[in-house]
Image 1 (cartoon, rainbow, N blue to C red):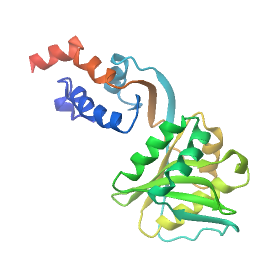
Image 2: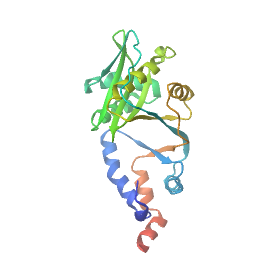
Image 3: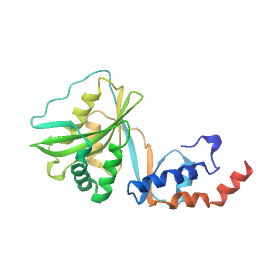
Image 4: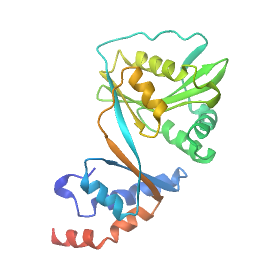
Length: 231
């Protein structure tokens, strides 16, 4: 985000130039840009770096009025995970989301290294069958990356995991929020069912572009250069 009064001066390009080396350090080779669907300027910047629209994400929210209890699910245990679980998490999420194992491994390492983020695993029969991560900011809890292994889907584990996480957060959070792709019909149905209505098209995600390309493309943009000189 760049303040409106500071836009069109190359600020975003400079931010990207600082962020991209850090992404490379974690092993990433491309970037996925998420743009507010209401932002014409955001869409214009995405177009300048050669990114194309790929999918829409919906913001889902459940307001919390105080502590709640989750319905017990026999045989399912939700645990806070430590960094030693990186390999198991990477294997689970790689299979669930179609990422390469190496990309998934780098992603999980970055989550464990992020302040304010926690990882939770769901275990059945002593085996991790699902997982998600949580971030709490300003009294609001955000849930990210809910995944359930293919062999365990259709058994209510996704709902049980969300219910358990929400119950654990209800004493300290005023709301729980998450985002879901428009292409994920099963997840959209689940979240509506458990009382998380979707907000109108919150964000549009555009396709990944190679690292080090985006910042350079913006720096070389003649419109940005001319605007910077004018101001």
